[in-house]
Amino acid sequence: MVDEEKERQAGVAYAEKRKGIIEYFPKNGIGAEIGILRGDFSSLILEITKPRLLCLVDPWIHTDEAGCAEANEGRRTQKQMDEIYECVKLKFENVGEVEILRMLSGIFFSLCAPGELDFCYIDGNHLFDAVMQDMEGAWKVVKSGGVIAGDDYGVVGWWKDGVTLAINHFCKIKNITPQIFDNQFLIQR
Image 1: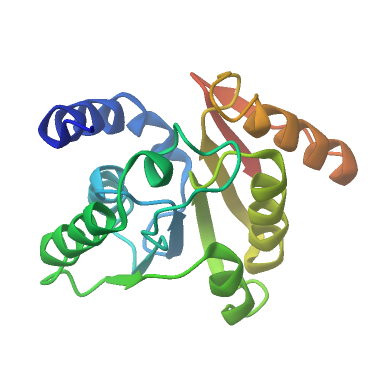
Image 2: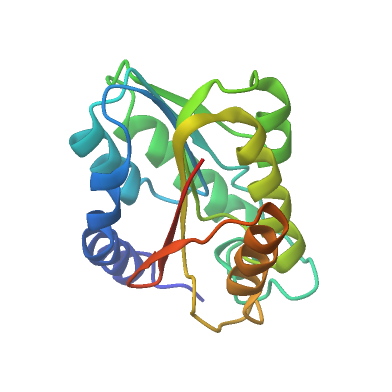
């Protein structure tokens, strides 16, 4: 069973720890965060970038997908995921610059126009194929000069190093080098 209060406190502390990467995001732009859970990092993105629009994208769904038993969506019931989603809606209900999109990231990227985003922060499903899909989607919709960043680079967890392997593979294909900041990756588009 998940101790929600303990995890909430840990989530706030972890968001604070990684907020330095946000300084590299364009200010007053349009951005997206993929993988929200409670919106702790979203609050910091809003505070630091002052975006015209921040799209918070997460399906908030329970999964029994192989390899995801230890992931947020694998450890919680659908009822718990629904409760977290409702809390996120309340948290941002009076923030006009926020659009909460309860959907898979692939659907979100398909709805965006090429070059529509100034930045995209990726912290969704950490399995290799999912990270690759998020990187490919972000690459299409983040404008030239924009930023693609994300979490858990260099961290080996339940996802079998999927983030690191996917980012390295993606960067090799694109012939680019990511910047790494304390387990955060950043790519200038």
